[in-house]
Image (cartoon, rainbow over all chains, first blue to last red):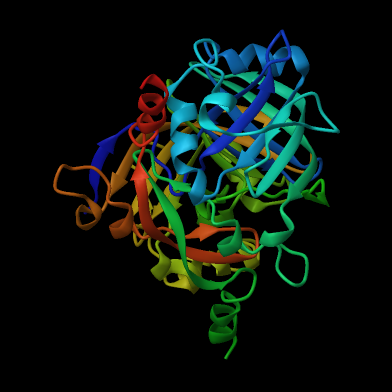
Amino acid sequence: MKTSLGPKTIAFPLPAYLVGSYDANLNPNIMTAAWGGILCSDPPLLGVSVRPTRMSHDGILNHRAFTVSFPSVQLALQTDFAGLTSGRQVNKFARSGLTPVKSPLVDAPYVEQAPVIAELRLFKTVELGTHTLFVGQIMDVKADPEVLAEDGSLDIHKVNPLVYDGAGYYKVGDFVGQAFSIGKALIRAVAE
Amino acid sequence: MKTSLGPKTIAFPLPAYLVGSYDANLNPNIMTAAWGGILCSDPPLLGVSVRPTRMSHDGILNHRAFTVSFPSVQLALQTDFAGLTSGRQVNKFARSGLTPVKSPLVDAPYVEQAPVIAELRLFKTVELGTHTLFVGQIMDVKADPEVLAEDGSLDIHKVNPLVYDGAGYYKVGDFVGQAFSIGKALIRAVAE
């Protein structure tokens, strides 16, 4: 018998995205976002939800662009810091020691120290309540060569991304199984 | 210098949701979804993206409801199986040994064996391309008492959810730090 916890924003796992944008004066800004995810395969779309009161909200709207930097465990303090502070009070890049890089493809900055980043053009804006969902079209994903496997794909343990649960940050743990593969055992079991 | 990987649907971490719905004959169905996430705090909204060709697509639209069951590592095979097969060919609940439970709040079934589940009323439908984004309002979250911490919150290591990266499933690993807390070290460091 399950226990009711109420209508809470609970999901596993949550991401901890560093969302990059420029303000009206082209100052680079970042904010931490746990609300969002990949939303479509073609066009490749990733959405992040942002409160209208956030400085990033107008930055994304004005420049029709944003980036998502996927922070590694090594950037946990900086990621949490970017969620605790406002770009109106502090230059979050400078104060956290992170380096903004102007995307060559979209009008937004990404975090040089993040092992993997995505550059997004604003595709759709959906007002949902406390948050505005910004759906961005992924124009490119860039990664540090050190986090690639030998076949050129991303090695999640080299990326070492933060996993979030609404209260704390965690590492990615042991491999469990291959997708589109381990479930075949159940198909075979039934066929026999 | 980062390497360009192209406009791919890459993000860390991705979820592996089991999305539950009823078909036109009230048969319970599940599908695996990695595209989605929490999208708004108030109202509490969670979105999942589904291809129109999927049986679940019409089920969610017709019943204006769905559930998300968050599978534990113990359900990895069943989760992968639900992504490999179609409810048109097979009763995925029966074949995978999972038990459908009719939600008392919305017109959709959830997975009894999942440690945490969310019940959602369809709030908004957004057509994005290959996928339709179903934004659901979270009416309740239910959890097995065994996965709760002493203070009544969810213990992520007891939930033991699957983490997905587009190719494989992983466990949640070591604790890194407390959110809205560890970043304060950078604020203090600057203030000093």
